[in-house]
Image (cartoon, rainbow over all chains, first blue to last red; front, side, top):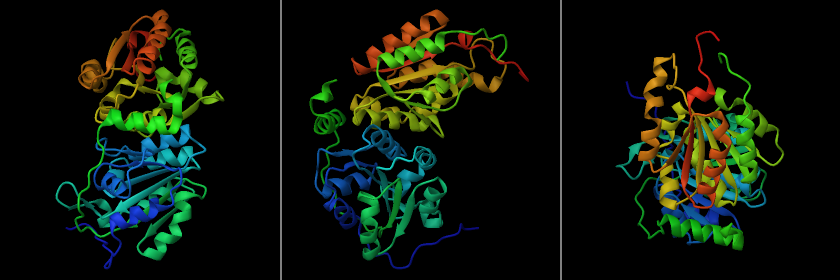
Length: 203
Length: 175
């Protein structure tokens, strides 16, 4: 018997445009992006020393964001990742709920598919509600976004309001043009720490 | 715990972590680390972060270090297997990693289900690029953890201190 399926009929948001919009007024926010298209989306919106792109550790992006948010309570930390990536570390929502970092937001770019492996369905395409899981885990707020006006309404919760906040942004699953993204770990970590910590990066 | 003498080694670990200015202590609750976890939770300078699974640990510590804070992962031997893919970020980005592993499936183990992972701890960690310091004497634990903090945070290595079940004490049914 086929599993329950709940694909919204008319998803019009495009992932690159969504991430570009979210990062347009990011200020000095620190951004962690998850493996797969999310790292591409963030780099396409404009490479930045305050970006840390992940190309592995599937399921780990939200946890990198948590450690960073706890270490830097005065800076906004925004994790941008995919639905498959977050599902692989779903327990991390409970861990974040317990710590309740006010400065952490997680944005799930949800195409309901594993884009890197042949567009197989993820669980979100079968009705799993990540925003409900976040709320049930103790997040301050969470929302599922289907339209451009809903995305606008989510901007303050993502970048400013008291968190932790989780936004699930439903995007269509059409392929997007690939961009070049720095993927050299030591380069990225040194660039990131230097920009954030200055000379203390050497400590 | 059967016949477990009151030992000072958890306090020795705590002092070594304090001296290294460790600020984030991430853990999955474990009997061997019970005293240390309680002590960290009471400390004003330390953020104690309970995890749902050890799989979360290396990623939190990577984020902490990117944000300028040092951390440590406390876990039991059975958690080591959960962590391995997440160690990729430590190796690829050359982040420091300090983890303190209390052993099961080791000296005097009564539960056969603990044996497979327990016996695999050291080869699995080493295969993932982690330097292993095994310690089986309570009196040497403090200095071993202190040495590991230097290797981790000054030499930017990933280091596991594996504390033998001989030190931790072994469980018996119903105790």
